[in-house]
Length: 320
Length: 317
Image (cartoon, rainbow over the protein chains, first blue to last red):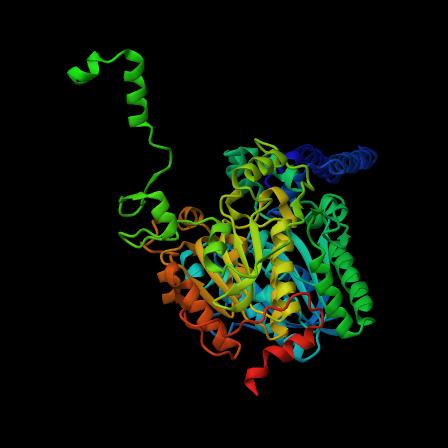
């Protein structure tokens, strides 16, 4: 089993392995020309990928959102921003490596960028705390947002977290208050905010940097109030029911767009963002630029009022 | 059985026995902390605080507001709202059925009750979570009712008090539920722009999405003694850090020590002390239980906000 592929992708992995093998044969012998065969297999592989990816279940998408090779915040920052300078610390307690923030330029335009960062290898995963911020992470984000308002810089947030860190120290330093304060401030921050979910949008930990004028999602990212496993173990009393829970909670970009809870879906290349990071970054950059252009047209008072009204409209209930 | 009873015809005998043993259900309750057996009507009179050890037992949302508010000038807000099932959510049970069951059990349409009224003559809007209604979880109706509570406070230029008791978000409403955190926090920001105080009273338990939004955003955060308050549940934390948690972790006293709340107030003193805090925040004369309310004006059907504002600030000049 190829660990770079998810379980449901294994047929693709097998086909790609076969193509690689043939390529190897092709190099070593000149007599047999098998390039036709390779081309044939490649088309077949494409078709297979397309057919698998055309009918992904919510659970499969949530696995893609957590794919070990999925691009993380800093991967995109490298590709779409220039002059990036990371800014550290909440000025109160410490610096949280699970939450990254800084200044940079998007196609020349100065911006503030904030996002959760996961780790790639074991060591980095621990340093980044698996992308689960502590209160100092949210307070650093808050400090940078206030700074963005002061210097009239738009805020771009990249959301990718299983959730805010559920630990003793996080509770001691007021995890609840840190998230609540961000919601409170973001609701009336006098500068454009564009939030994009690039992987996992885990509950309050995601929302803590997720209240903006626009909410975008990469195609195979998820946004949910609790992880499918968590929901399954509470409501079904069985974590194995996660696929059912994922379906029931409507966590995918497509379903959330239908429910009008998000604005834009940013398409990913065939097979997911990790199969072509450059192309994903291009799509992301374009969406951000387009949205910034739109938001620039709106006077700041209206922008803040529209944002407020948008939040007030969230929810479905009967009135009689 | 005595010799005299034996002599009686059996019909009379059974009747006598029956009446002797027919103690109505639920007359006695047990304090979960000191195990004292308490007479329920008496416990209710004491606002569910154990007279022996002062343990604060949970109290229903409506009961809470009834004991907190003055009897005069009450007006319930948001009774027109009832929950929907936007996702047709179904786990082991349908969300619709769960709602019906809880509505029957509690007599409430959803987990938040909002009443505009007065405390010791000070007009205000109060909201209280009903924990028995799906763990006081915050769905669309709770969020909308809270927003209407805040908007009522803005309209009449009066403070807002919220008694929270909630497990957090309502999973059956999925992301709609999460968005209520954004919604309720945003309306509190609006309230503060109008210069109106919001006092948050955190009661047992206040966790998850409710603590990470409206409940921690009070100008003054108050907790009842020994209430469980936090972001992540103790079990989740235990599973994450793989160690047993220290005693008193995530209790009110722990939060006070770590600077998350301003004070802990005994339920029996809640009325007096909140009324006093409000009169200070709004530049009013102090209230006292013996006097007539010092802030008797309850403005009915007044749409002009500025007019009300002037009236309330007369004392300042």
